[in-house]
Amino acid sequence: MTASLPVLTDNLNRYFEEIRRFQVLAPEEEYRLAVKFYEEKDLEAAHTLVTANLRFVVKIAGEYRSYGMRMLDLIQEGNVGLMMAVRKFNPYKGFRLISYAVWWIRAYIQNYIISAWSLLKIGTTQAQRKLFFKLNQAKNAIKNMFGEDDVPAASLSLDVKESEFTEMEQRLRGDCSLDSELVAGEGHTLLESLADDRMNQEDLLAENQSAAILEREISQALNLLNEKERYVIEHRVSAEDPMTLQEIADHFSISRERVRQIEEGALKKMKSLLTPVVSPVVEVSPAFI
Image (cartoon, rainbow, N blue to C red; front, side):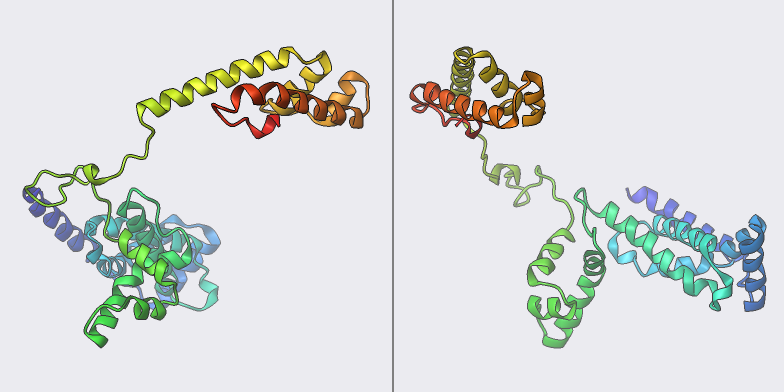
């Protein structure tokens, strides 16, 4: 790990040297090139606009170094945002390119940080994104003011609920491996401290046996129904894609009301056939009562 640090530093310094070759454009030249790309889609003009603003991306990316991401990765994402800004920039609006591009640059850098931060998806709404990037700033401001952490005050300053503030604070700590030790050197892992809510083997076996009994009894009960009753139960009650009353009515050339009566009678008959047998073991599905 440490051996790669000099390489990363060298690459970063080399990148800084490269972008210093590109001069910042005067407002008049920037406007001329922006109009040229906007009107004519001149790629050379777009390239000049991008390269002239690369140093601004570095400056913005530097504001996010505290999140533990590689500077080159932050710069790369910011550069993508810059290119998108150039692509959508309208020079006739009357403001400089960088004033517009800064929002795109920040958006791409922030999206990268959020997506790389945790295995769990966080910061999906605009309010959550704001909380993600402003939480530590708010905590530090409150601590400097009162000398200690104050979650209610910090959450109030960001106009969010205390529960949302606390949840995001926990997420900012990052993912934790279940194999990580609770106390270094003692060998007890986080996984060992988690409760196992799964059914034990005896309960699982009993549940499987009960389900098998119920399935067998339902099959036998269906065989005791007449043709129409069995058809209605199989196609209206137990089917994954149930037929409508009208579809069954059309099938038998009867009215919808008659189908409803058949269904009601069949369910009552099923209940009388199943309840005495299965009630001591399992609860009958609501679909059959």
